Amino acid sequence: MNASRRFTVVEHLSNEELDDAIDVAQKADETRLVRRLCFVKNLYEGKTQQQAGAAVGVSQPTSSRWARAWNQDGVEGLRPRFGGGRPPKPTPAQWDEICTLLEDGQPWTPREIHALIEDRYGVTYHPSHLARKLRASGMHYAKPRPMDPRHPADAEEILAERLGQALGEDTDEDEEDPVVLGFFR
Image 1: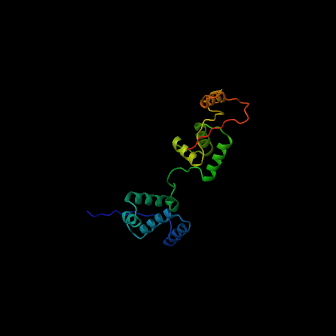
Image 2: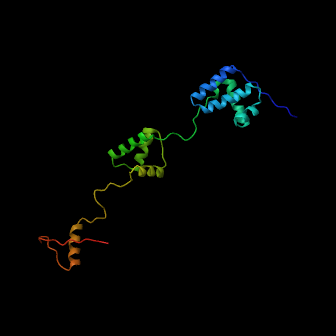
Image 3: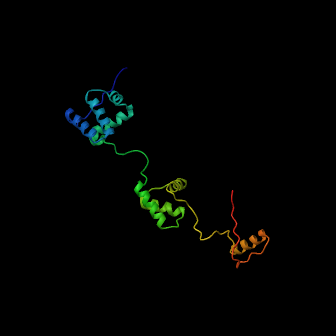
């Protein structure tokens, strides 16, 4: 039972027009369209879908899909509709713009940064990835504090008192030559 099913190909273009379409697609650097048009050329030469698909390196289901697309819409039916891959992320120029906005409008919370990027560019990042991208750009999340909250209000007085105790004398602020301590390795 060696019945090979032949597929009826609608000849939207003549052989010469098909060759011209392949040349135009090659010049336009549309490699995926060139491959599909070569598949159709093999069908024009009388090959089965499976043989034509094998000649350009695609599976039988893909060759059936391409043949149906050719019969329905011709060259436009074979033109790839999706570029593939992940959705685009901000370009380097857009990322520089984001960094400038973040530097100018400080302070920002991580949530506000996510909202800004999503609203302005339609791009979402995982929080840890966004933190990595910001660090790579020289930015870091930090809580803006005018002073260290662990710092006691009378820190200078405490230092003066402890310094006097360490030197074994009472320090007097009116002295001509104050004692200066340094720490060396």
